[in-house]
Length: 408
Image 1 (cartoon, rainbow, N blue to C red):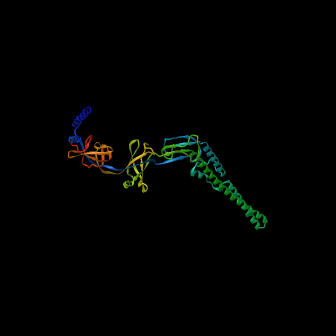
Image 2 (cartoon, one colour):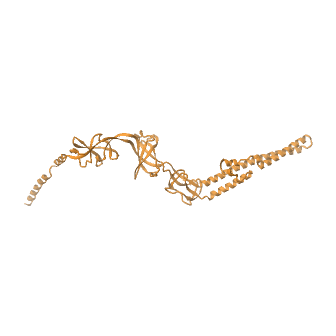
């Protein structure tokens, strides 16, 4: 009896439920039959620059590891990590004591060499450096005391020889005196030649001492490291008080302006890339776009990856860009590529699919599209919509096939 009552109750509930909900197909057709008010816009033709989008790494135009030309102990740093330096700015100084003493030693040796030639030890104002100093060092060997002495002895021995010859002809002196006079003349001539050679040797020694002095002065100058170009210190590789060998790395300096961007352009786009074309560069974390120019292109396609290596120069006067940053670049190959635009509000997205709703014969027609670049509030339509077609703005819950009423 109890089971019969329960069964009767269930049978009474089912018809009531069906009657209240209605047929799902009937509900859908009811919604499609209701016209929805929509705002529309026309897809318009426009122009956009034709770009090749690539990515690469920003690099410094120049990067150099700086080292000292001479060995010494670090006495002072004028730059550190991140420091901006100008060309010719002092960056590190070695202890100058040893270099100053070497200059003084070379100056004393030069004065000694000048004195041995009969020149003034100081050499006058022109003796400091260059061709003027060399002119001060020139001297006629015949005017030196050593050669004049040799010349006087030579002249005296020549007179004695000539006199001995004359007396020997007159048979007034024996052969032995003539032979002695001839031998003395040969000795005097040899001494004269020795004097000339000694003067030339002293002149060469003077030139050597002059070079040693210039070398000592140059080493004194090289005890200070100067920036070869304007840039920023990427790394400091020495410490205060450290003894540095010649050529040991001290700083790594990078040129910050301009920067160089190396990118690989796919072969299909390589034909349109030319030197001088405009480039727009963006980096991670910076919404700004930085202008640049294509500076160099490789003459050949890389066979391994079928790409063309391209280098662009990017101005960086403000130092906002950093070498080593990952960058995206748009190479503008032409400025008047025709495209189709629709308002960005007309694009609907669902599960990664982009679509628009067209208005045809008073009904909404769903159309999948492929979008491209944005220009303000407009979006480029690469595929799916033709110029002049009417698209719905802010479609919301609009479905394909639903009647629509266009409102202003």
